[in-house]
Length: 151
Image (cartoon, rainbow, N blue to C red; front, side, top):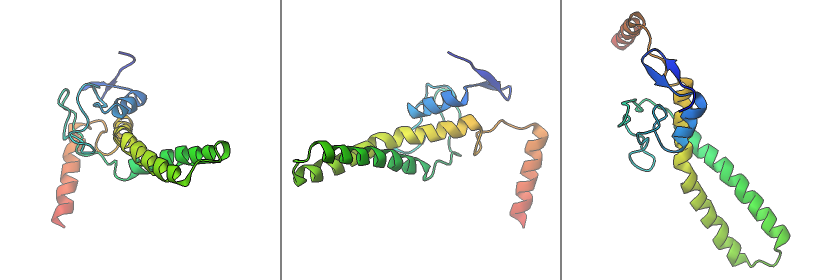
């Protein structure tokens, strides 16, 4: 294993790049062993290997935007090149090839990109993945939350 740094004193955590790569490979961004997804796009509640919780991630709409950006650029370039180099291609071939390729690429990239976004959130300590605070900070946050709820 490469460079690992202590994260909050509790357990070793990977660098941000390692966490993103582990997420891209659909593994736990913390340990790299447990599965990140239970179903196609449903993130597991927690890692089966190290116990890291994932329920608080906020990937939302960012992975589909990244996938659309990548696939749109690849297909746009592919259509342009095919029109310039192979002028005699029939219309039915274009109508069959490009939508099929778009669907296959989107389905192939969506899960790894979502995993990479969850890994990025873990690596940057966003949305509940941050370092655990001291006991006094946790108590003050709990008091603030209960005060907000009572209003």
